[in-house]
Length: 604
Image 1 (cartoon, one colour):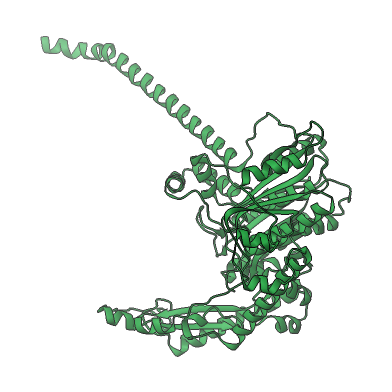
Image 2 (cartoon, rainbow, N blue to C red):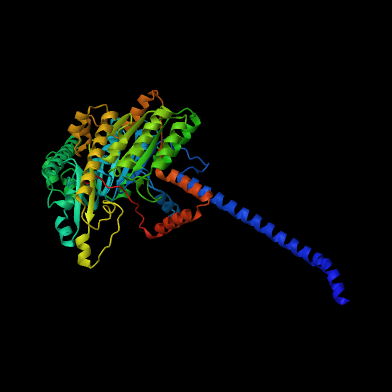
């Protein structure tokens, strides 16, 4: 009887005890969902804020006006940054160290200062290795313009090398620290040759190049450079020497210039006696003396940084609402088929596509300048980047110029060719219209190490790129055919976009590297000058009025990479995003403060 009663009472008990339990579970689940949504929302807000901070879109609403009389102050340590990677942005954010201004930002500030009545002088500090030679060229140009407008430029440095002294010589006064060196020693290229080393290791190289001046593979197959390579380097050195000596002669500090360079380096006192510098003093007292020299009645000028000066100008232009803009897109590094990881120093096609789209669709942007520093790379990648420029020109109907930095060779020149205007500095290395490929066989090395390979191939050339045996005659034949085809495509590409006959291109191609002035003589570039000249050319093509104040909008790979990272985060590909951020964060604490900077005049 008791058992039957329990059966009848079971539903009532389940309802009495189960409903509160179910309600408690429901409340817990709802609370969990709300907390998860709030937590995810906070993460998204923080991530978007991180993107804004790293891309520079977040700015304080507090505006600091420029003083009536100001000294524009800048410090030049190593080579000026020609772009920024996402890694560099994150390192700066994590370590709390401000990023150095881009080369274009420094040039923009200096050119604006030329006619800005608020700027009464320029104070420049050099340290470490200083700018690259092509950057020094651009700085010299604006220094001379400033002096023409009666704006004194005082330079201070501990040590001066060829590049920094070439730049500083154009200033009004040069001061050096007591223990410094003045070392304008000229130029030097050096090439390694590894043929004997590879033979000892048992590595057999197979190098194909089109044509005789495309000398990259010589280091693997020869013991010294070829006659063609010697011709190129001697020619480059002769022209660089002439450019340096002509500039120093123009500055009028030194009389016996060749002897002065041959006998360098000099101690600070020696340089002062030879009138290569004007003063020996520490930076602090020299800076104070400069401010005192510009004193008018009770009005003492205040020093402003490049960042603050440009911010003030941008605020002014925002108030005008009609100031035309030119987008400056920085392309720095090697060229690959797919771009690189977010911290790699490569030119990313996705970045360029996004940057061109944003600049093309912005009605306030009248033209686009691509600031290019690249030794080249993949033929396929160069073609992809080049096609993006062609598409942007046709779609947005805005002029595109390329401002070549220190190097724009091989695939870098392929990329640049379709632009409306190509601008190079006198010392820019460009051209190198040619193709090179290097493969290596490690068969003998494996034997020495006691390693045997068993290979299973479906076809005759299936293992040709594995490097475990020498190439067959058929493989060599096919690779030669591919190299010939690539070279013909390169010549045809330049011929089409530079409006030259194939014969004209062939005469200056063959893999030969040219300086900017030589490239202009051979119609490979249009103008000699720096970023400022490229912007002038774009404005002329866009029919911008000469009396309009043109602002520069600087775009680097970090901005679009961060937006790409945000999309990946929101689309659920969290592991990649977190790993990238963690890796950049760890790098920030392990790497010394000086960030990577592109070197000048890397051997072509």
